[in-house]
Amino acid sequence: MVETGKLLRAIIRDGHELKTTDQTIHIINAELLESEGKTRLTNATIVGGRFKETADTVDQNAGSTTIDARGGLLIPGLHDHHTHLIAYAASLVSVNCGPPNVTSEAELISALAKPSGSHWLRGTGYHESVFPHLDRQWLDTWAPDRPIRIQHRSGRLWILNSRGIELIEGAARRLPSHEQDRLTSTDGRLFDVDELLGGLTRSDPPPVGQASQTLAAFGVTGINDMTPSNNTQTWQWFTELQNSNELLQKVRLSGRPELSHSQQTTRLSIGETKVHLHDSSLPDLDEFVSTITLSHRQQRHIAVHCVTEVELVFTLSAFRSAGTLPGDRIEHASVIPPALIEQLCELGLSVVTQPNFVYERGDAYLQDIPRGEHPFLYRTGSLIQAGIPTAFGTDLPFGHPDPWAAMLAATKRTTFNGNQLNEVECITPEAALNGFLGELEAPFTIRSIKPGVPADCCLLDVPWEVLRSDLSSSHVRMTIRDGELIYNRDRVISSHLPR
Ligand SMILES: [Zn+2]
Image 1: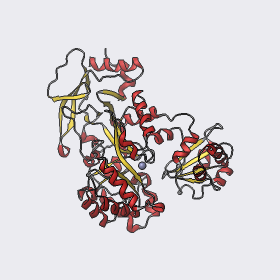
Image 2: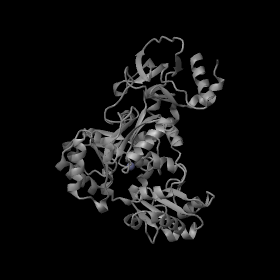
Image 3: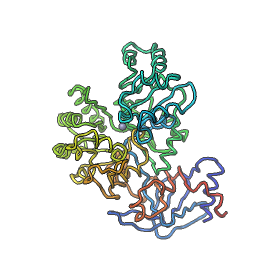
Image 4: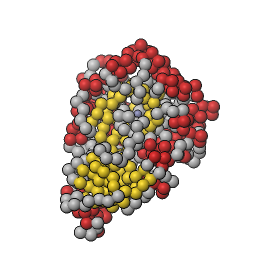
């Protein structure tokens, strides 16, 4: 196909992605999903960054570009409804310290010894199953020669060696004394200081471009960044990252109440007010209720982090006092006893959960959590059946960033070691795909390829009939956002295409 060749060569020539926003693009021989898994073969035309039509014939005039889908499925670009993009970018230049890569004390010792240098070593993903007593003394014994900080996979705890603690204490002298106190620790374990620590240790900016390209290769065109500390500075940072085209995806930025006053663009929108609860230090209920009320007054939804039953019960009682708006969300909803399903329904709350944790962490859940509670863990099927709006987010970097792996986990509920967790919660591939097809602002409203909608899409190399039994990101061929090609797997072989 002449036009395809031209398009691909243009990408090679420029060294980066071709901007096609103003162009006409025909995606021919594409399969579109209809309702209930039915499909139809058609041609989709993009003009000015939006889908103009889907039709049996196309008018290939001069200047237009044609991509032959060869019968592959064309779906709306995936939306990851729960992410932490900056932490994910930072994790790409960090050492993985947890399962499945690192599962024993010996493996942790060798992981920490690998990267050379005397600058900060940042570890992520640590969990007690690797080795239960990780502290300053252990790190000083096995890795004393450079400053080290290792993050627990919950994201709440950092563990530092003595070199690290010394550097942090030195740098913290310019901070107010109550913040210095939060950074003082004899065993090197620091809780809930993520933001402070980031500010004191950040030398080079994390590789957001690399992170964004990886997501584009999974077919992701939009994310909701759920980091609770997101504020006006984060907003500014994301604006700059998008303007420089380092960040390719659309972003809904959730976080602090102050974000309500931000100036939205077509690619950056104001997300939910994020409330991060911890079992051990729940906030004052009245304060929580007034946060919800205030947010609702600004027509802004609330998203509450609930990973335990206590947190969920507390949250439901706050919503009962404050009232709910359709679109208020429970994040994770890791543990839901049957009685609380009814309450979620009554209150009209929705759930954004991570089926990928079934695969990634399921073995630890099976071992550590009483058998009687296993049916309550990371539910999906029973929520959908109960009519609770349910969508998915990977929680990257705390979960693996590949949404296709999350879809697969939602359909199989198999753990890393091949065990089964709560099989009755399995859902169909169609329902699993829908978990990532919702609008960023309404994750439960499923998008489709139709005239008038933004040309955010993902082209697969196989039809749905094949893909539904092989949910894998290896099938992603191209990703387009607003009519702009942001990922193209064929790029490497493009020089062989005919002129
Ligand atoms: Zn999260």
